[in-house]
Image (cartoon, rainbow, N blue to C red; front, side, top):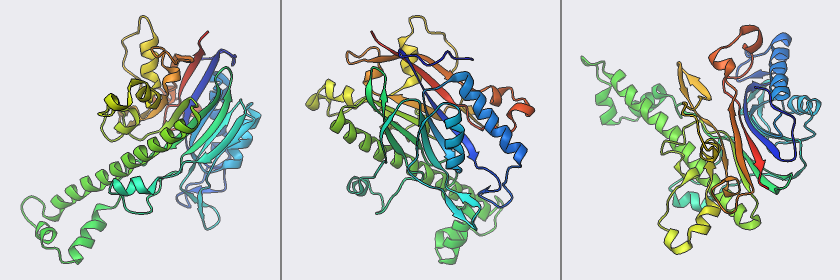
Length: 360
């Protein structure tokens, strides 16, 4: 799907998980994970084609290892404004871990900073002292046409990967002499300690969910406080690693509150964030009933985990609306109908993009 060039009345916002963007001879996670020059060129060309055909005005990136390489690629593609707030971890001078987030824009970036955590609220939530985001979110304030300063957040919440290895936890508990786990570890007709490992694995996965939900809740607080300070419109984009339909990320899109009667509907609408896809569906007079395209696949099971959330300035049913979501696009051909020569070193996510039409 080819988009028209950027105009003053259409502003396109995209979220793009680059999937291990790292220039050779550096490696990601393990010394064997190094792109050849041909593979790296193929990956960069794939990104260039996406930018040229879809022409987003603002892009939030996840999984960035080679920051300077990405900035150079984007400058060549017509994005003079680029920010990040963190750096990857490097060991042995070439093995990179903990990729970071970045944002590129065709419009001036007025300010940028990392999102912080309110440790007092975290403590009230029962979170251990010193809790930090698994990937440091960034907030960039961008001067958007007709909208003025807009706070754009880029996130990559904790993955669903187990927070710890079940086998290590099993060994640790057994060595401590814990009777319940020792009993489960005794061989029996059902598999003995293997039975307990399934339960420990479930606990390890839930631990990741707890981290992901905590990150979302504490970021939502930071967004709300910034909103009170500035009144700027809000755009939150990224790889959420979970569905908004579940309960883990419910803090991001709260739809009710016992405080409504006390604080009023106006205050709640100013606080609220909504899914850009649903805002687009609501803005259409005759919406087409089709399934929402997945943005990621695991074991052939598709799921939507990449989102763009918006404040009430982008809700066409709100009297404070400044722009509405006129288009929503999921770029997924490389996932559902891949061509090896073109897509073998692309990304394991579908970039998502919305078009915002300025209201007259």
